[in-house]
Length: 119
Image 1 (tube, one colour):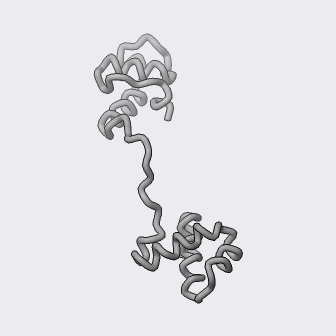
Image 2 (cartoon, rainbow, N blue to C red; image 1 turned 120 degrees about the vertical axis):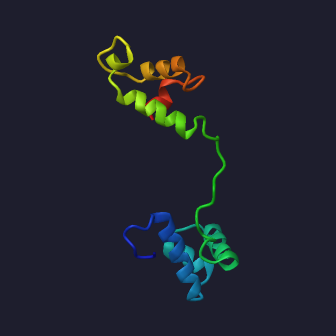
Image 3 (cartoon, rainbow, N blue to C red; image 1 turned 45 degrees about the horizontal axis):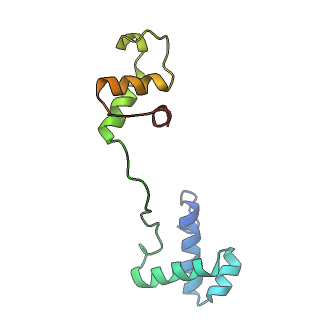
């Protein structure tokens, strides 16, 4: 993992911290060598000592829960992949506000703006 090309960069840095720790290097020395903050090195080292390999992995972050279900997302994507003429909409092509409006009219989602449709 430490030298794998497909290992994400944050995971690679955490593995390097663990490897330095296995060589009995101090947190301050590891922080200097890796360019990480001393507290970050201590946190990852402690998590590894307590939990093993899963310890330094990314934790679930708090945040806004998803607004749409996977089914709603798939339905809006399917709608956007259709030609507007197939849906009875008098347009030559979709722009983001129109599929959002169409999704609300079809009852796919109670309220959806153009931004999530664009994403």
